[in-house]
Image: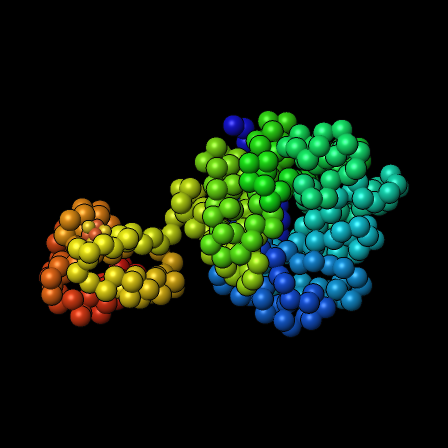
Length: 348
Ligand code: SF4
């Protein structure tokens, strides 16, 4: 593994050993300034580090001009083919542009884009998807990891030709294995920071599982500088999933609930207690591990390993704090007791 180049995106950094950032994308109409700003704030409050916005026309640019300056979240403009829109987005103060320079058409146009981005200090993400590879590359390499890398690096080369190196790269696919192979290859070939994501991964559990496997495998290999979990639906769910992936990969601290799957030995209403604890931890910003275990078989072990824990018993349950038995409480008082202890732990 090697360290990647460090890129500044507003008040955040991507690569160069900086903590892996969480990204998401608005799905409001960009021209609807207030709704888009509202969603940016929701994403920020959920823990999103960088927010991307699709910019499709001059109305969108006008709307973004009003949004920039009303949020401190680094904003990325996602532009498909129109390099003039990309230049406009750099000029109005976007913190990063997602654009593939190979789509511009002429060297002169690439030069104009590079000139604007250099003058404004705007980095560019080159993002290639397996679903939209060039025909030439497809004919030569097929829909393969190599094709994704060749395509991404050809865009990057166009930028390098004009002395531009402030680049982040993504090589996304909805095929997890293909995607992971492509990122591994790319990591071997360059020192640009990598934006990880499994594209069009679906919704809810299916999407989260796909993203977790792909992004998680790479992160555990030490590959990846920023991540986006793509899920159909409210993008806040993407942020929640991304934060959990980083936490599970040991790259970010946060609250954790250890809970058993329950079985016939379970003595307490574990699902209800889990939901209540999850709700309480949503607003907790210090790392806290809470164990919720249904009985005394594995309960005491897990519960004593956490900051706080409960092991369910018949009528009464044992509450643990930092490995020691704190007290025994009636089962109907478990939630009240945990709430009090979580409040105390947060105060400390
Ligand atoms: S901790 Fe107890 S209740 Fe929970 S799954 Fe294990 S044996 Fe069953």
